[in-house]
Length: 246
Image (cartoon, rainbow, N blue to C red):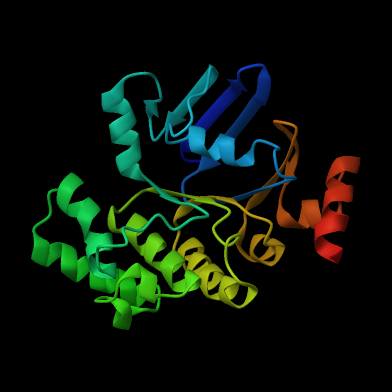
């Protein structure tokens, strides 16, 4: 087995007295697709945000691609260059065109020349299925299109790892599939992905492993077959019965 690309050991996080993460440990291999699910407030988003230091953990160790996350800002910057992130909200710059939103990062951080950035940007818009939207502004796009631009923007930095924090939860139902289709293609291309989501069809189709979080802990983990066909824990069974039957 190759070295895991992400190693989290005994991660704890407090907000004041609230113990948000209680000893979370997880190893993720290169090219692995992990889906994290669980009730709201269970620590899922907090956990994936510790991986690129959007949230600081107070105890435990996180190593991403051989670099340990500490207070060293140089290490944090190095990790953020390798880790793309897609949020619930699209966080696009409203005053920039779609293409400019995508190429700004690589031009500033990777120091690409504009023509190279534009060429890669157009390839990525092609990949997410909306090359014709390049000159438009985010406000002229549907939510699903904006989220696909956000994915293209994260990919433009050529990350080794992609984090998705409930990327479809702010979308209308008819737009969810167009975003999930892009994520499925990305998963099949071998990208290492950690996805916080309740989209169980997506999880069943592409996840290598699922992790069920509750109250700041991993309650259960396993392959999609394990989790959907033979969940072991009462809390997992209850949660699955609620989301699969509604």
